[in-house]
Amino acid sequence: MAPFVILIMCFISLAFVSYVHYASRQRRRGGHEKAAKLPPGSMGWPYIGETLQLYSQNPNVFFASRQKRYGEIFKTRLLGCPCVMLASPEAARFVLVTQSHLFKPTYPRSKERMIGPWALFFHQGDYHLRLRRLVQGPLGPYALRALVPDVEAAARSTLADWDGNVASTFHAMKRLSFDVGVATIFGGQLDERRKAELRQNYSVVEKGYNSFPNSFPGTLYYKAIQARRRLHGVLSEIMRERRARGELGSDLLGCLMQSRAPAGDGGAGALLTDEQVADNVIGVLFAAQDTTASALTWIVKYLHDNPKLLEAVGAEQAAIHHANHGGARPLTWAQTRSMALTHRVILESLRMASIISFTFREAVADVEYKGFLIPKGWKVMPLFRNIHHNADYFQDPHKFDPSRFEVSSPRPNTFMPFGNGVHACPGNELAKLEMLVLIHHLVTGYRWEIHGCSGDEVVEYSPFPVPKNGLLAKLRRDNSTAVSVDTDGSRNNNGVN
Ligand code: HEM
Image 1 (cartoon, rainbow, N blue to C red):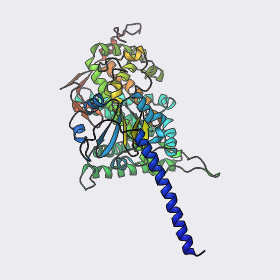
Image 2: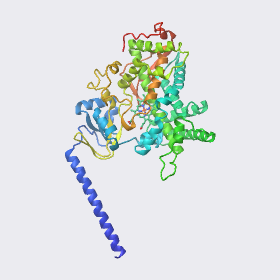
Image 3: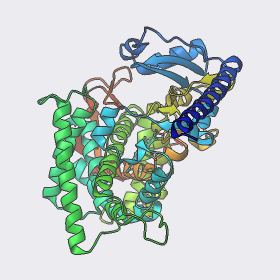
Image 4: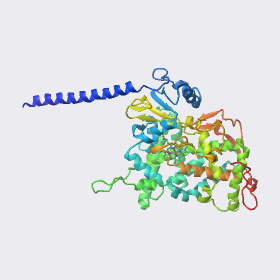
């Protein structure tokens, strides 16, 4: 047969196969659309959708009002993207846990570029799994036990610097969470010059993160991209030095540097590249800092606004302070595990403040959920905050009441301050440790007064919610707070659970 005829026959077969594939896809999709309809809701204006409504009011009011009107699943369009919002525990579990393979993480390109495209939270599948296993070691209980002295040193030094001054609580707490993040990643081996370089460049990256992504020289975004390059430079230098010394370390950086992909064909698997390691170091710092600082800021506010509770927490902590000879001995891991009331205060603060009020995924195929179609390419947003503030799951949800965590555990999938499923927060135990240690030193050594407004009504987004001006407060040392413990060391919790 002439080559020309063979070519024509190949072409016809290819066209036929493509047609059959296309027709069956259309049929499948048509079937889906007939059986399932889009969720209720308003798509707003062409392209911008309801973006202006979202940004012109408190985002929680935006979501809550739509949930009231349309129910627990509704559609909208934000920043040019069609979205489906999910405000029920079952729907959040569907997207994040049971059908997570149908929904991929999704972030704007500009944010990916800023943090680094190899950071684990942008990925799914094998690479994500490998990174998760890697970070879980240095963030797990065994490693955290050894980190207590570093966390304690950071908490003491944050409070000592704040002592006597009016300062933004959020900024003070950011310093703490940065120092703890650095100790976790570099195992306390980083010299002050390097730490200052990291802090300085990282703060420029942060400023650019929420700015308009305009790469024109002089803009915040441009400066942030430059600072990110410098950060990479510093991290590469640290990695080179560790290799030259022949000691990679067992901290988070060491774990990332040593990890090999599963071996194939008898050969050893590949190491992560320096770029992959650096993106993940920046990613972990980023995930750790503002989240924990924001949660701590709300805790300081809630304790201030609930004097009886503060007294009871003070008594719980005073007993430990007393057992440690007035703070002369360091806190132990076991002691941090015994702070039952303080732990409940942390859980209730995480519920009330819902720092991460929702997350984003993108449907990788047409998905049907409870008779509704979630079309491929649409964004999907499980609304954690709406679930945390729903009276069906938390009685009197707007009341700050830590005792609700004593009476019973929340129903499954109703309490997700750290997310759920394959991307759930691997740093949650570190964050809680940091909060327990900070509260211990705050209530046993200091008193504080809030300057300006302390109400919930003025909330700023950075992007996480914080009280206005980051909660301006004056701190002063007061050792008498530690004395509210009975002389035998037993604690007096003033009847608060
Ligand atoms: C109060 C503090 C914190 C809160 C409320 C918080 C919350 C969350 C949430 C909700 C997620 C899941 C996001 C999603 O599913 O899209 C997440 C992921 C993550 N968090 Fe946290 N986090 C906190 C502190 C930390 C700390 C201290 C670290 C590390 C030292 C950390 C590291 C991470 C990382 C690496 C991820 C991505 C996990 C993945 O994609 O597999 N977080 N966090």
